Length: 91
Image 1 (spheres, rainbow, N blue to C red):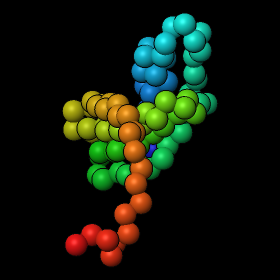
Image 2 (image 1 turned 90 degrees about the vertical axis):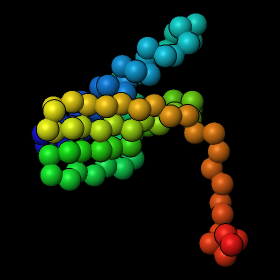
Image 3 (image 1 turned 30 degrees about the vertical axis):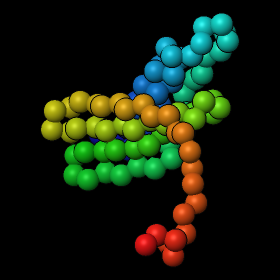
Image 4 (image 1 turned 180 degrees about the horizontal axis):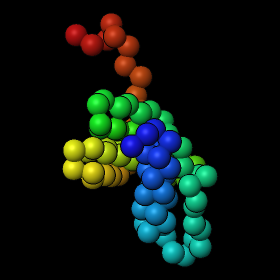
């Protein structure tokens, strides 16, 4: 699977997941245009990417493609905090 196909499928999976978990009373749905790739890597036949959406919900998604089994794994995470810790502060 090439990178473009992996990203296209990943964006679709993330948009579908987000839409299923949005509060129905918000009457909001996103499309793949609202999903973006933050980071990606490919090693041999396997691919991994971190994706997020334009929604202000603090969610990010880890997508893994296992080329041996032709399977995707989607993990959804909520960002709670982002701290700056300078190297010299770590003892």
